Image (tube, rainbow, N blue to C red; front, side, top):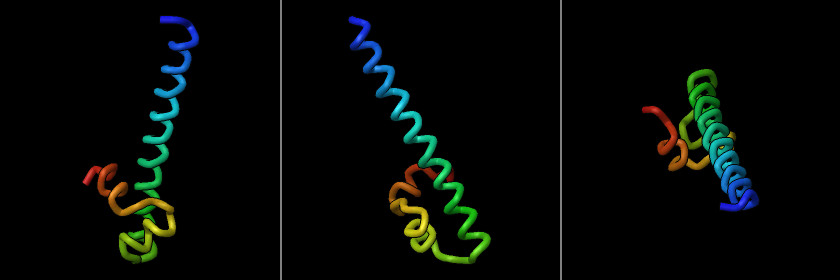
Length: 61
């Protein structure tokens, strides 16, 4: 495998990892908003700019 191809694969892996970490952080923000502000899941997801489906996918619950 060429160095350029390996670098591209590594960059994609890093970007995907960052995307997952950001989504998991957003899930924790949604959880905090639900608890602190006593709002619904859909309202918290709308504010945090995440879909309810993504929330459920990445939530530990």
